Image (cartoon, rainbow, N blue to C red; front, side):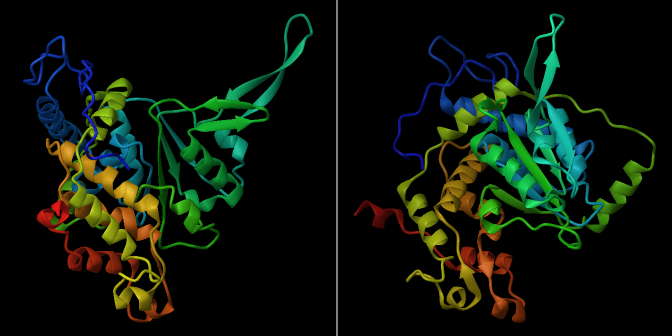
Length: 366
């Protein structure tokens, strides 16, 4: 976790969203701009990004916010939703707005690890000398869409998830670094499990967010039907370059976190563990296993991104609560009793967020 009292790093002169340093209302100078000015400019760019996405995507406000928060914190996302909710379209449109490379892999039962990471091929030059050359797989990109990740066997899933964690690929004796920035957004269908290979809990933990897409509202569905049946293809403009995203990631790390927010995150995560003395009785009864320390790290990182996108330079408890559900839902395992009572991991997290109150700042000072 980041030290909340750490000194704030100087803000790079590289524009946050590809503009020149004197655009967006910030004061530029030899010593860099004030952090507050940069954050306000960054918040303004979020409006631009959402407007560009709105040309193609109707609704899904929370999904878009969580995807952006993951990108700004070097996280990976798992998208779950029934067919037809535009999971693939959301990711491809987001990649079009971000001036970065994008590749899509359709996972199938016959997909091999080398189909993702790449392989060594034997070549012969004009002098008859043979040598191996590494041919990069589709994982060598900035944004990777792993479509229906649960349709491929565990060996291939593990190859992808290792690259997600280490951000490198090892083939034979050689190790190859993945491009920066690098994000994986995986999708899976939650209703059709025949012929699938569900991700183990240890591998699910590598995803920062588990985002569940719901059906659109009636008005949003009417808008979707109107806009998609005209035969028109909207054009989106690029807003953030790859270098700007790296600068944004550094900017987000400089957002301050108060000790009482860290205490709240600790209380929330520990309350998900049935063996912890602070866990409520319903957690002890309904939960088999709770979230680990990585969940707390992701809660703070996600809250930092939310605060930065709002133009604030400190994290509030409300920011943690906004990301609690996508961070914790896939890190809690409910038991048969929970199923019998109609309780899901979402229900448990929502109840914990509602019941656990943050410590008072004045108490932390004592």
